[in-house]
Length: 187
Ligand code: GRF
Image (cartoon, rainbow, N blue to C red; front, side):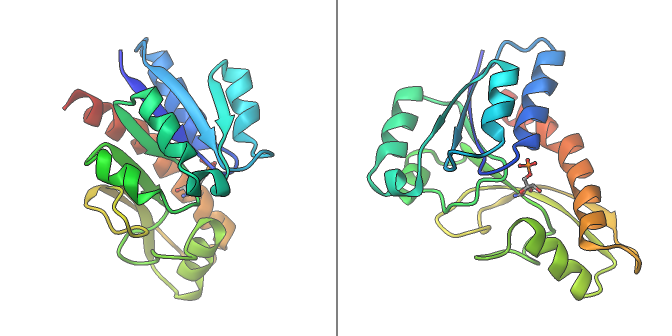
């Protein structure tokens, strides 16, 4: 049994998809969800999934509370699934290659500060890209810069809106993110 801490700032559909994936396979992993937003929909999902969850705000991160909780939880893997804050560097230093993030584009394109959620897909459309995708990478002390573990691509056609692109990217995320996590847990 592995101990997995999932961090999400908003809807949390990836967090739910990851938990369901392992449940369907009867893996007895222990999940815990942390969000920085007290009204994040991921908290509803946690309730429905019967998974423990808590709010740790940006201010609390700055006060070292996230570090304290992670230390208590002793995770085998920390998964950032739509977590919009820069992850505290002291935790990154303590968990080398144990913190993964998913970015909704093909890094190094469309990454860095301010490139999150819908902004990424809007930039992809504005730039007339013919493809985009997902990047799963280890977390370093800079936004979207850790070693890349996995990428998958999807095509973008001229008529695609940012919402269409978001949907295509979400499909890739749902398909691949749990499998990559499974592999990391087994390595
Ligand atoms: C995902 O597209 C993820 O790649 C990005 O934020 C989105 C989160 O979606 N970083 P959800 O909260 O998992 O539905």
